[in-house]
Length: 348
Image (cartoon, rainbow, N blue to C red; front, side, top):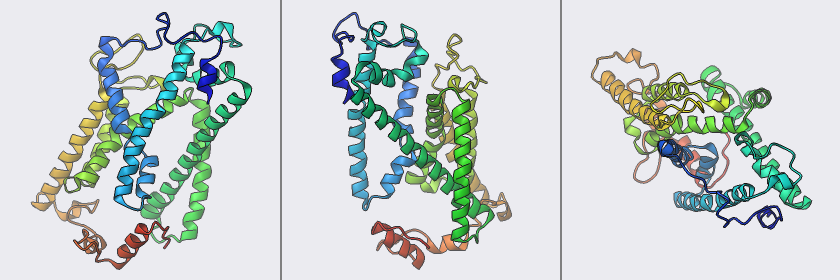
């Protein structure tokens, strides 16, 4: 909605003008840096909760696959408007507008390009709708994140670890309290950390380095992973990622990998991809070794504290894998599967 008005603004030069370098260039020494971020965008976007929330809510596997392909094509289309907005901002003579900030625009001000374009290059009604849409999207993401964090703590931590026999009402009250606590912590982080983009970037890195290997193995190579490998891979990926530092969050680099940029305090080496690969290797290696050690008697069954190799709980053994007919041995699992296929919400 804002692009036609911003593009036609009298203070915007033609994008075809050779004097306006809105494409830019990449230094050869930064090629691996951009490859690292490219792999992060490709594979790091798969394990996000917002994606699997929609995949798991689909009625059939075919519909989930179709939804994924359509979404991939949609992401490419939706990347065009931000590129055009950035190009328009690059071709704008900001000193001739109502903009009173530093000119030329500093690199640390690039995150403000969208509100600047909406405010100074479009009519008031377009700016109203644009900023309203951005605010609605931010609030939607924020409340879903708070709700998902509180619900996961209440059910996956409080109920499974501390109170296995907790009633549904008790879980609901724990969830309500958790929402307040998570909201307060999120507010404190937003007020103390100078860059919201830095938080998003760090979160994307952790999803790519930690969650992608876990999801890949659990979904496609389930027999080759277990809890011991998963836990070890989590620690390895987390430590390797933190060792590279994060300038946007003020985290110094503990290790200077080859090609470290001293001037900008950033890693040009693809250490994020290295952390992901190390996590994947650790997951497979530790899982194989722990399985081999327990099954050959090198380790006694009492040391299987995670109960995933030899001390498998009886209810898990009874359910087992789906048969060819698609029925489950456990009647409760059959009911859950039936209601999931009907796309209903089943509450115990």
